[in-house]
Image (tube, rainbow, N blue to C red; front, side):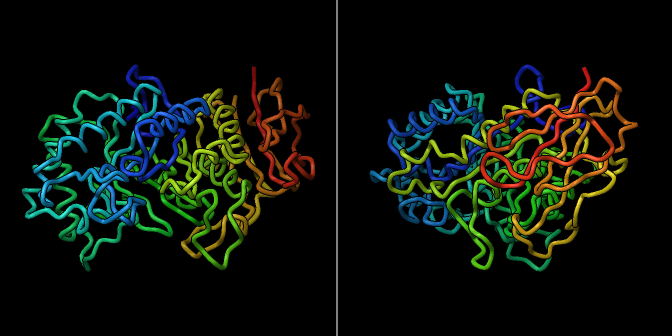
Length: 417
């Protein structure tokens, strides 16, 4: 974690913008050749992170609930989670090495909300702890792991602070990881349709950062997690996936939906984002869908933000630079589809030498221009292409009506030399 607790740093101590994907069932659904294809393609597209379950089950996209791979390798002998089948573990280790070779950090779930009680059935809490210690020891030499647990996880308890039986097993696995001397960052993914890790009092004191999970307008949950004290990175970890729509009554997920999620997150304090597609379970033909228009757009937007001092950006809340024209802000957990809200989000560096304003729809906005240097430059950025249109910084500003994709969302970049 960075000093100040807002973002992640790499092994050199430099800020690193998370640019993730969600190949949940990669360990059990793809061959070694296809694992290499996946990581090489995503790295070429600018991805540097991936959410992956270590053990498969039907719920996380695996072939079956016994944890078997597509070609029949089982993780455990006779279901004993401490009796490992070497061929399975050698393969998953090799996949993590492939990820490292392509500069991709794996947000790895040793146990998740789908495997526990299915492919992962521990005899006791001490078994959970022993499993965590063994996992951490086995992967100790790999440089590219962030520890995760949960995943669509609803604790079965009326006393969240005390924790459920499953909470205690997941926590014991974490303690086992720490017993092995592994101090790498840890967090938990809680439940849909909207959550962040510190919402749960049992986990709030255990996590190193907030995993934000929301199908609602993205900024609302990210801002809530960003406001947690002490400060923790509030990473937008999951939202609507390309090719999926988990709310039947809401509009289909489009490239615009995915752009809004990323840009709302990055202008609300998230130190990156994690993208996802319907191929999280590697549906037939997934190889031909790695190069989609949505991926190209998201990759360009990440590259644009990555060139800015993004780690210094502060959400436009206490002293706003956008003073009018922001639209309706969602502040509670009532469901709105991402495309059913048009709130303008913004973020700026403390010295106001860099600012980003995201307009989900074209309209006039009012800026507090006294915050910016006289020599500040302004650009309307087409979020579908990241092409820049120089414009004059003024108190009242309006973007073009439509971008190159035919939609009406725009990004305003303000920079002082």
